[in-house]
Amino acid sequence: MPAKQTAGGRRKAAAQGRAAGATQSSSKTGRQAVIIVHGMGEQRPLETIRGFVEAVWGSNPTPGDEPSDDDVWLVPDNRAGLTELARITTRRVNGVRTDFYELYWSDILVGNTLAQVRAWVGGLLWRWPHQVPRESIYLWIGLWLVSALVIGLGSYVGLTVSWSRIWEVLVTGEPLRNLWTAGASVALWAALTYLLYGRLRGDLKHRDLGEKPLRGIWATISPVAASASMTHSAAVILFAPLAIAITVYLIFPWSLLASSKTYLFIAAAGVAAILGSWVVPVFGDVARYVRTSPDAVAARARIRERGVELLRALHGPAPSDVSLYYDHGDLSSYDRIAVVGHSLGSIIAYDVLRLFWEERGPTRRNPTKGVALAALRAVDDYCRGVADDPGSVDAAAYRDLQGAAAAALSGTEGNWRVTDFVTLGSPLTHAEFLISRDRLAFDQRKAERLFPTCPPMLEAGPKPSFLYDGRKYAHHAAMFATMRWTNIHDPGRLVLSGDFISGPCAPNFGPGIVDLPVRISRGGLFGRLITHTDYWNMEAGGSASDADGAKLGIDHLSAEPKAHIKLLRAALKLRPLS
Figure 1 (cartoon, rainbow, N blue to C red):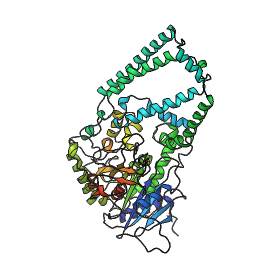
Figure 2: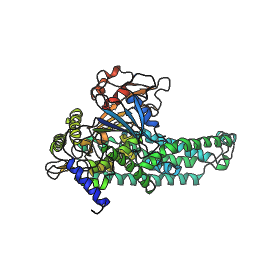
Figure 3: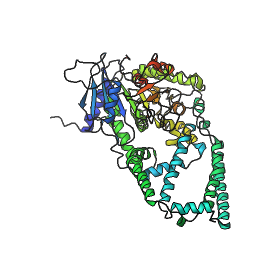
Figure 4: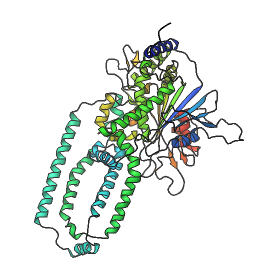
């Protein structure tokens, strides 16, 4: 009687069998998948995906209705890592069935604290204006004003003197200042000015002498000049110490200050309620995910691993020996997968895709050949041709090459098959501000390939390339060689108008990205107030230009009353546009 095969032997045999059966074929399963990654805040399971699917496809059929291509159903499916979630599936349309999944992560970040938000906000505030992106400078100033208001209100709560007494002091000119106060104020002004000037001088020296991490096309698509003017930093040196010194000079004893303390306590309680019920739960997610602090590492790793596991499940068994490390027994696969990230979810999706590319992309661990390798080399040839001339990048032509490479890769079982990355209201437009210290540090991370770019960063040399070893496989940050990136955002003229969190991503991550501005309105007087969560709102109206519609093959987009929905559907390419 033959001996029992060990678990390791069974896994190895299965891997060898799969490797033998994997061929560079064009066989299709007639299935495609969409993963939606929700944004910040205490989201509930299935809350995001239901509204999203209704916007891009349809809704549950009502008993008695005639069958429709728009029908969808919820099906139990735990591949997303939670039993509270479900897969939403469609009928076959033109021979293709679409499955929708939600990458839910809010449960991992539950329990945000005010201390975490305070530490994150402090990190954003304590930097020079020239280290703030030009498009983020007004948000940065607003953050300073709000912080000053909260601190000032908190200080006022401790006062014990009536407003009438304060008014009496101000009107009668009761002497509250003396020579000692004046001398101390001047000394404080001089000390602060000296310290700030020294810090700025050191920063400028580092910036001017430091090696520029990006060359060619990348040196122009993310210039240091894209940050706020140096004049802003000079203004801080001139006016901030002076303002502080004058405040100290004019200040009078706390015992003279008193007022309707009850009202101040009420106001303070209101601020505390806002912080506890909205700011901490919502922005606490951002604070914990983007900060590289020890208390955030474990949660961030769990979120990314959950996302990678979902992609593994949808891709099916890994080819070759990679399956010895990553195969979990799921045999399902799709012809193509699209990943959609909203708000903070776009940063999470970006991280998950970056990690999964290292595992299933045509990298050193999982090289490809034949038609797929030829398609990769075609993308590489294009990137080489435009590397030194950013103006020559044709996003439409590049997207065609990306699509061809993705289709060729999907011909092998278990290989990378994510064709599209769609970001909605993405804070990646503020990447140098949120996930890096300044533009120079951000560019350095891209040059080191910690942050993948579109097109991919090329390896320096006589013949720059993102392919290694005789152009046989791609490097670990080349995921946008085979994956299109479409970014939909709603620019607003004022901070609370439109979506101040979003913006274009091409200036930060490359000219291969298609940025699509839309104008969303819910109607009425406040219809443009904070549209960050309205990208798939069927009740809202949306407008966009014909030129932007043409980027996705849409004609006469300006005549569409819901252009934001039309653009989202076109970006996903789930079925022919009506």
